[in-house]
Amino acid sequence: MTTLVKARYIMYLTGQHNDVPEPALVSQITHVAIAFMQSSTFNQANPSTWPFFTTVEEVRSKFAKGTSIMVAIGGWGDTGFSKAAETETSRKLFAKNVKAMVDSTGADGVDIDWEYPGGNGEDYKQIPNSDKEWEITAYPLLLEEIRAALGASKVISAAVPGLRRDMLAFTNATVPLISRSVDFLNIMTYDLMNRRDSVTKHHTGVKLSLDAINAYLENGLAPEKSNLGFAFYVKWFKTDPNGNCPANIPVCKTVLMEDPETGADLGQAGAFSWIDKVPVQLEHSFNRALEKGIYDKQQGGHYYWDATEHIWWTWDTPDAILKKFPLIVLQKRLGGVFAWGLGEDSRDWSHLKALTAGVEMHHLGPDKVDKPEATSALTYKDEL
Image (cartoon, rainbow, N blue to C red; front, side, top):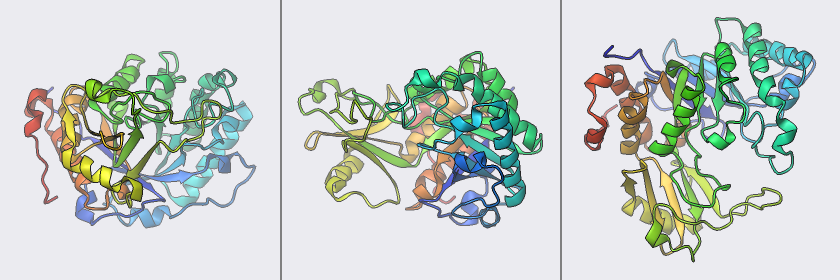
């Protein structure tokens, strides 16, 4: 076999950044997931309205004919899934309401963003993982009910964690059950460094992304149901001034970034998209990062450590995006890719263009693409 099937090419469209470029730039996108609708809406007895920042019809008009328009339910900090999964009755109610929403809005399917079944979500300091162990077995059952309600013609996907420490509900016992109910999983191979860490790493690097993909494949997920995630945003973290970073880069000790008792953000880390205004206090450091950033060939990530302000910057350049296709997507024969999120790249669409070029590379198949050691020569077509 020398070629792969046509890749799924998925974009999240967010309420925070809902710009869509000219049709030519999105002509190859196969699925759009509009984010987010709150999961608690579907726990109500008979909801009749579906609060959202846009409509499926409006979004559909901005993409090529045949693009699947989906509604993403949940997101970071969303709290309704646990109640939904609790009993057979609650699961059936949730699924019934999902079907009602899909029928009412005309959506082609749903993306389930429970972050995360089994624990380690935003509330992990308030509700211990031991109180959420039951969710590990309930999660596949909830997906099963949603599939039963929607039938085979609708698309069901789920956004799933990219760090092994968060994959509590994704074991060799549960992944095959989950896979039966979904068309594909969006593996969130970004935010792989966050404020729970104590040393620096690439938040969407090749090595950590490969580890995430391997974790799901090892537990029974078929490669063709696996999508690799890309981030259209930058992350930064404060490093310890006494951590001897110059001797250890790219692994550097950070300052304490979250309250150890409450999990609250201590303001020592953050993120912003390519279209966002850079926070004033970070402008000079970020400009240095853009000018002097380098690619770590061992770990596979673009970064810069600001020795003056003790800030670690981690992001994907367009070239770093392209490198992931031979190194991950083609090597593992994955079914597709996705990005968070489309409008986040609306400054110049350069990351979108690179991702589209990578998808075209996917269509060639692994035998027609340069070997991983030659990926530094890869370019993308700026005229896309």
